[in-house]
Image 1: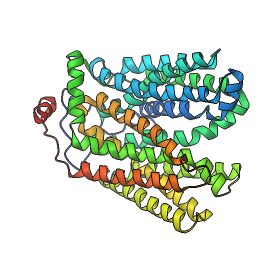
Image 2: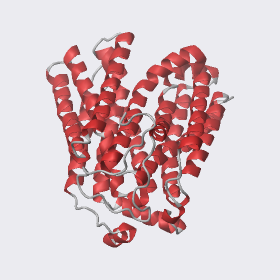
Image 3: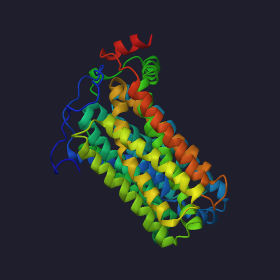
Length: 436
């Protein structure tokens, strides 16, 4: 953590790599967020990956209990991801006009109700619909947590906050299947959804008690759909935002590729037992967490842009070595495990810093910027996951190639952003004029 319990995280920074664009109608950053509020926001970002991965070990049992096929059960995962992407695209821009807190409260409450509906689902059709609602509502926690931080912090202070949030969001999908396997055995798949509903309800209490409104009425966008489209145009027309977002999205997709392939690569190819695989999987998650935590300290000395460059470069170099390891050395066990550990751990420098740099570019429309970022993050991650299994379950080549391509893409995206001209410091009017 970056501050002692009960203290506030500072909201200003001397280490921003380039002058952050002036806030538009949102104005300058407000009061710092207390640590307790930061923790609630960080946990809200974990709801989506937990709800995605925790019930995966129960798929075979769910098909039997609901009298349906494995394909139909998998559809419940697809509809959740669709709801998560659409929810962010709707809720993020809407929050720029209506404020953050009300939508965050409504989303958390609906997510809890939808989780309970999943637990009580009498049929696969009911479950599929409930999962869509759960994803759509859960998107509020993901997209608005980033927007709240963007409303209150810039530069180094934002990098620390986003480092904490991205640490949890990055580790959650790695640990969720392990936690889910234990819970499915203990309480069944309905119990897992009941637990997810309880977590959402707990987050609702946290929002009500600790999360303030950070988008005051005077700062809100007016003009309905026209204003939403204008905000979207300025966000998507910002080259630096697109570059930093691309680095985040491609780095996150590389982790998804690893998560999808690791059960087959580590067990079928490297020959690890189920227990050894769990240990290796957990060790990589720990490495990611340690590096992300280290990044929140290093940002006091180094600019987020520099730390991101180190992170994406390390991932690219390690994935090159991983591909050579697969092609030339026939995947020796310990070198492969070390390379995977280094690759996943290096992503700890990517997630928080890329998010900070991207949101700093669109502070006038933080909800819209967060929506685009989140929808791409989960959409691209879900899209690349099937690629790692194209050649079967007993080769690591598709995983190595996919991760390398994504890592090189992240390097190029970060370079694209770093070399793009800074936006004019003239608020929304200046941004719109620059794009005209």
